[in-house]
Length: 329
Ligand code: AMP
Image 1 (cartoon, rainbow, N blue to C red):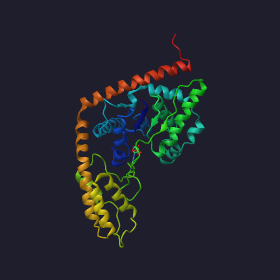
Image 2: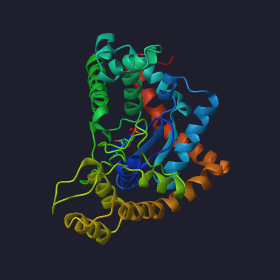
Image 3: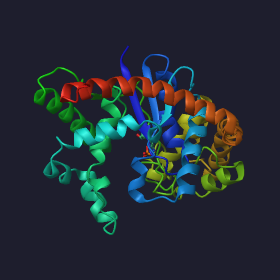
Image 4: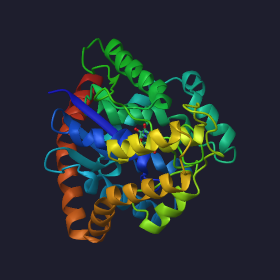
């Protein structure tokens, strides 16, 4: 069975974009592939989180993944720092990673701009750690957004380079993976094309109903259409897109008709949309809150995931050490 791997940095709560754009697919994927989902806490150290924040964020993501339907008995869900083999493979891969190519990575160049006071070596070698994450489980399919594609190409290059250097056919080259045809992109409530954590335009899975209502009611719209079938402005288009994702088809059809006949009242549409989001998210939010508090369950999940992940990781590392020439006496 093909191996799929996906990681997420523990830097805050998941929003509707993460849910519909990624998690919902992961939940389906876990029954068709051998899936590894991990919380990339080592990666998050590049921004120097406090110990309390780091642990809290790992717990948050874990609870959110589980609440959304990732089944720890089906998929392997683990915390990156629990698997020391990843760090060792990272060290080994660093020997074949060239400074020049790492410096040319667009994400690194961007980090130099956005955090000029903290350009640490971890940032430079971020793609090497990503390669270690993927290659340690010999994953062949990696669901990635467009921005991460260059990193995946670097991983493929390191896999090739390792194979060539040691004249083996050991690491498979991973490829970007779009599961299913309907890859949804959830737009922002501010008229922008994408809901994002840093953009501050998102609805979080843990948002309380009153927070959701407030956010939706203040979403960007316009003064309303003045002629039938008028082209929509970005904010209005976004509201319809979100509605298509969370609401019933006839609800969308109803408001489309109102829009096309210039009778729409955005206030009514927003009220309906907010209620549909609340209905959708309420069971998920309640589950997240329950799981977040259940330390025994979380410990059990993490221990189980770590055991499964280490089984695969230690096998790879043993073979890599052998290939490199670290041989037991
Ligand atoms: P991020 O939180 O940006 O690191 O994204 C984590 C995952 O969620 C990635 O697979 C993204 O492609 C996906 N994602 C993030 N924002 C959106 C969005 N607005 N629409 C669809 N997918 C998204």
